[in-house]
Length: 150
Image 1 (cartoon, rainbow, N blue to C red):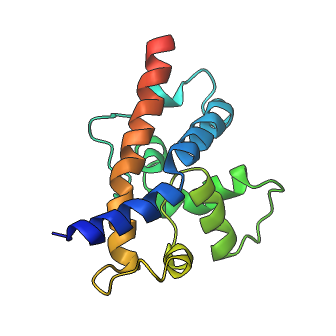
Image 2 (image 1 turned 30 degrees about the vertical axis):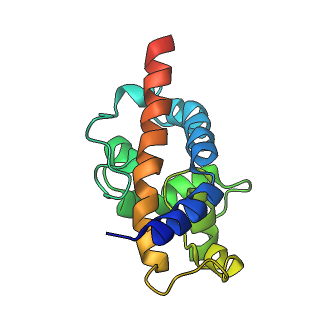
């Protein structure tokens, strides 16, 4: 269990990830993309928001929609790329998936920006794991908002 100072640092970094905006961006992208892949189907109807776990390959948004995040990440990144091309690098795919709220990317750069607040007991991995909880919450909010207006 992190100390109060460690938790404050974790919360600060997570806030800077803007996960709420990323989930909203991803949801809007799926509003356009999913009907092209599955005409007449609404993506948010295929998601079980109560079993949604963004950190799990089969229970995340991509996993519930298309089978498994690991197997479909490249295809979805290509479809979301500003200029779709077969040669996306790992970093380009990660940036696309992060921008659309499907993953929490590497937070080491943000940690480096806050060296005066950093504590030796908080690692990048610890923050990334903690960030998936609010990311899941924001995706649930997007799903439930669409269901309530449908």
